[in-house]
Length: 363
Image (cartoon, rainbow, N blue to C red):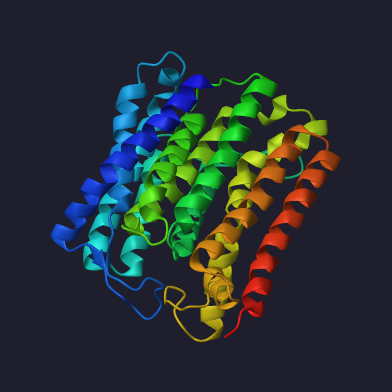
């Protein structure tokens, strides 16, 4: 655990230090988000936060590669994840500067998923009526779909200062807790790509947040959102490859299901926003890739919440869904229910109290 904590803190420190230099470079080359009708920010803001995250990740890998435990996490899978993430960051940098069309970005995301497949990172089984081993072609298709959905869920939620970075940090923390506890409880190797990648995810998000919190000095851009989405998806898929589902008894079905379900649980808020936006736009006769101001965070803002409070509400909802799901894998359901109830009560109270206070203020 100490080596993963060192990895997390190192990634956070590097990202924090590197981000101002990347910000200056983004301004020089014109990678700046101008004001659009759907945007919440009111001043042009540089992008390319994803580049700072990628540099921090690369330097962190180079430094922790020699640690006794974490060093064992580096292998074919970690290399594949790094190369796929590098491709997406490169595509994102171009998009942040020149505004690529949606289909081009989707093709790049599919290509990144293809790199994962080349390095043996794919879904091998599904917990359906027990455990079903998937034919390679089906497993590859499921893998690509998980990667595409996760990337675009993170991309869609990146609409407020600090929102995506905070939600991904919370999601990464929940996933790291699950991966590490699974290794401890069931005797799997504690040195693996999922724990390494999620530790880095948490670190780069924490290091980036001080620069991205409202009012943001820099945006992560598509280079950052696609980068983080890919790392989350790859961590989940890699974890399934390390688990022998038959080694976990039928009485403990939770740990068998969660490697595939947890990414969707921890990203429940972005996923709900993603699919509701697609349905909303198709009903309106628009392209699902078009933009609007009807995202979840837009509606919370219009309810009378400040920018910061809206972000915190979204954080709380993410944690309220993610952490009880992790608890349910290792504790009785009644324990998970108590945790979920307590977190839900606090989240509802916090979400409602801000609106009540604002309603009482003179207008």
